Image 1 (cartoon, rainbow, N blue to C red):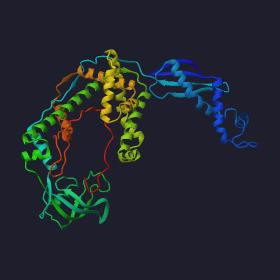
Image 2: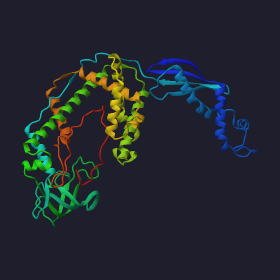
Image 3: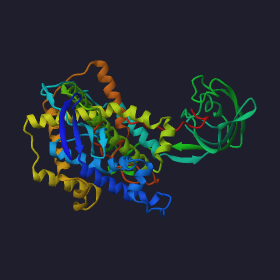
Image 4: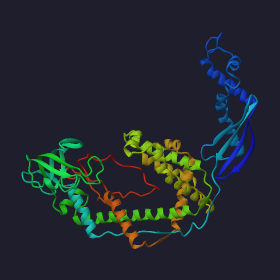
Length: 486
């Protein structure tokens, strides 16, 4: 193998012209012959016993060349990369430019890590939402906790809002049942608005044993086009009416649903958890804003193959997580109404962002002379072993020391940028939106520290998760609900 030339191209591509010698090509042709001869039949010879020269005389001198190239070029490419000291960041494009019995020459367009420059990475200004928690929000959390621990009892009376009705139902359009419009012994909470508008309202006043015909019109914007704006009739039978009886709001309630002895302690814990979650959400939003501005300062000619490689990793990770939940990845794509190319297009901005952010942080680590010591690496290995309950040696097999060092260095650089950033007060609109997003994040993690209640209901112990948002959103969603439901 000889490297005949090395030339830098745009978009961080290095073009190598690589020559495979006559001797190397001949060895590859011999290997190709031995691999294929068993399937070749030539008149006058037993199958698999024909001499190479006889096969080439019959089918042409170049009969084994394609297989020989496939056999030899990976080794030639690898040797060329070592000789030139290049560090590829993705798959190279290969092109044969000359081939004969005396060998062949090919061009490898190798994507390499780009030269990077970045300035003004200290003192980046970004908005940081100001968060707070008021008594009304704590009251709302308490009320949700009461509902989760409500006692359900069957009652002999008319249905009212807040009750759960156990019903059979079947929907008809023009006298014909429509798909997805049937259910049996369905538990419907009246007032939950889980069915199309008007359905639950018309059950109010009914009682167990009643049979009703409910005439409705589907919304014009309903997801099933064949039902949108159509008049239908639901035949409904009420089997049972259940009432939710909320527990009294006192110290005994606090003892039942948490580890606290008084209602006031429970309220304080809920408020603290809500505030902590919102502060973490605000901090995460600030961090994302800072990093978003950081990547805008990056100057680098990034090869497409580098982004493609990161995109491959994102898709592979998503496929693994979906499959681990028992859903075939192909089925997931079908439910999302996407093909693999559509999914790649969806995630490409995220892949590009991550590549740019990593290049930025690597350069900052270099400029600021940040280092990671052996003790830090060992400490992180131990943390992962404890977190995932696996042996330390297995963690070290799964994650190389160089990979661990690189990851920790990026974290240090990220911390450096964030510590040197400047938080500014958001506009009134942005602050309101920030609080709304914090509320959503707080819904689950604001729960109090709890144990199993006397009624058997169970709430999780509060641990506000550390939020580490990624750029771009995951394409995730559930299949549409049954046609009777909104």
